Every structure is written in structure tokens, then in C-alpha cells.
Figure (tube, helix red, strand yellow):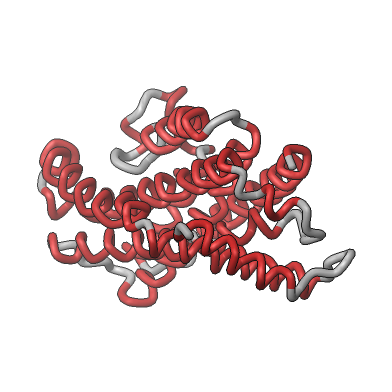
Length: 276
């Protein structure tokens, strides 16, 4: 029996113990956790799923710091407070993009055909992988910060500020993942999900204040950058990590992430239910 089929069989056994005709809130939580456990088993048995949250933060942090540091801030050391927070957002966004791709692959392989005949909560197959991916976002954020520290980054916010920025990055990755989860339920193939996700990810990342101050951009572009949800998260993370300040940017970032979840979580569940 293959590892994927074994994981699905174990998940089904757990779901069988929590199934009733109309799942209660407790049953929904149990079923979502069972799906999260299945996703964690897949990650453990497929190490390549960790490449984008282990190697990418190291490469991007070093590349952007040494290539753009002197041109933008005069030195690598002065550029690190800008680029580290920008890379945090970029790696979180890249990591959460994989959520929709993995979902579409499971649907294409017929994995969810095993679950659709069970009276489980429709939200469980979506929430489960999203919960498991919190580990991936945490890994990417941790490695990015550690790489910055090794390169000479000294956050003015201290341990508390860094912890706050780390938590906000993980939450932002989880929130934005619902956009890509929706793409996963709508697109016809995993390749299509990847293509659509890349078209969304690149404007959100590079048309932001991740790598350059927004004040250096043309007026029309600066206006877009200011309302870009990724820019809101980056500004909030900078306030926390570099200054140790709990500013209005933090509140706006949390509000923006909450709005994304409020919009795309119901859309994902509705689209998934129609597909299944």
C-alpha cells in the first residue's frame, strides 16, 4: 500500500469515529484535525514540500541583501531591516500558494472521492491542510529571521518585537492562503492553479514596499502600494521588529487579513461543495 493511500486510510478511520448525520462544532473540529494530521503525514513523507520554506528564504535573503543593499540603502547592514521584513512576507506568500496547488492535486487524484461519501463537515478538508501549513509558514519565518541575524541584522524591537512580527507573518500566511485555496477549488488542474497563483503573487510581492521605500515610487504606483495587503503586513512587521512599536499599521494588517479570510473562506467552502 502506498504512503498516500495509507495516510488516507488512517484519516478515514479517524473520521469514521466522529461522523454523525449533522456534524456538530466539536465533530467539525475533530474532523478538521484529522485532515490536518493527514496533511502532516504527507509532508513528512514528501520532503520536497519543504524546499520552498527552507532553501528559498536562505537564498532570497542573501541574494536581495547583497545585490540591492548598496544601491538602495548604501550598505548591506542598513538594508537588512528593510529586506528581512520584505522576505518574511514574500516567503509566507510563496508558501501559502502551495496550499491551493496541493488541494487541486488531491482533487484530481480522486482522494476526496473517499471523503465525499461521508457525512463530514464540508469545511474540514479545507481547514485541515490550512492548519497543517501553519508549520510551513512558521519554518519559513524562523529561517528568514535566523539568516538575517547571521548576516548582521539587529532588530530594535528585541525579542518581543521579533516574536510579534513572527506571529503576524504566520497569521498573514494562513489568511492569504485562503485566496489560493479558492483558486484550487475553481481551477481545472494543479498547473492552472500554479499559473494563476504566480500572476497574483508577483504583483502583490513586488508592487509593495517589500524591497524599496514606497516614497521612491511614482505617485500612481505608490497609491497602489499603500492599499496592497502585503504592504500593510510588511509595514506592521517592520514596526514590531525594528521599533518594537504596536502601531496602527498592526491593526490595519490584522483587519486586512481578517477581511481576506471572511471573503475567501466561505467562497472556498461553497466552491468546494459544488465541486464535490
